[in-house]
Amino acid sequence: MLLKSLEVSHVRNLQSLKLLPHSTMNFVVGPNGSGKTSLLEAIYLLASGRSFRTPLARKIISHQQSELTVFGEILDSSGIAHRVGISKGLDGDTLVRIDGVRRERMSDLATLLPAISIDASSFELVDGGPSERRHLLDWGLFHVEHDFLEQWKSYQVAVKQKATLLRTGNDSHIRKQLAHWNEQQAVWGEKIQASRVRYVDALQLALHRTTAHYVGTLPLSLEYRPGWNRATYPSLMECLSANINAELERQACCYGPHKAELLIHWGAGLARDVCSRGQKKLVLYAVRLAQVMTLFEQRKLVPLLLLDDMPAELDDHNLHSIARFLRDYPCQTFITAIHGQALSKALFELFQDHRMFHVEHGQLIQTISA
Image (cartoon, rainbow, N blue to C red; front, side, top):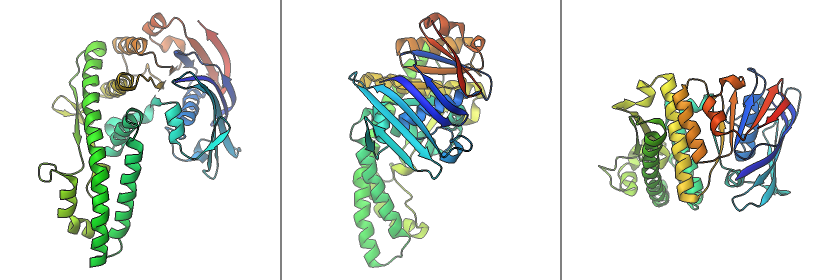
């Protein structure tokens, strides 16, 4: 997958911007507030249909404008070019077109241009709640296993139908319907559980290899908890059947993959509890780069990487380690920094062929190709 060209209109302070990125390495430099992160945000919008900073379109659209638009030319994994565009209005309406045809599913964008963003909000992967880490797993599975999305949709239908019933009452008719939706939840939930276990196993191996080969051995490990006590209830169906009264009392679906957790351990503790800010950023990069390795090895795909303010809180050794990984797994990458001097010497040594974009006051004012 490759972003060949980009046109951005009315994304925060980017009123009108066009660029032709390098196929591998792109540096975006400029002062704070110049629009560097907004440029990455626009690319992420094109790749996923959403922002990595806010779910509210009105916060992304430029002041006194009614909508934003992002267009791009993308080469898919077969080398076929596609013209892709997305617009968002103040009312939250989103319009996506691929090759002139309107698409209703944001997943069509993600399939065409897988993208990973590491930015200020990414620390939630370490510090935030379980939903952040479940999203990491499901992003990986969406790109690795073709049928995972349909499994997840089917599971969500069962959970939503069941949740509605749990709030309506507790008579024999309701219990009979709950039994049906418990069966559906269990069928799809077990499939999701099996997929996640496979993925976590692969991700753990990739994490070990990534840290050992590129960073140096780190006390990092992953632990997946499925969302119910498998020691007590080997199957999800057993758990749901045994706890129907508890769910009726709480009027909520309390068990299953939607309650799962991925724990990130640093030594004997959780990374969120024992790591410094710099160590947490290293954890972020280690886990995300392990995802890149897993995607490449299982699907021969490399995602687009959006690395906001990458030099901050990482020393030269770790910057050099990440640079070596990016050389060996040549994703199309965008790295922002306040100025060129903030970027690691290793990046320029390993990526002498690159493009550098200077952004100031929302304008692309200078482009240097090397």
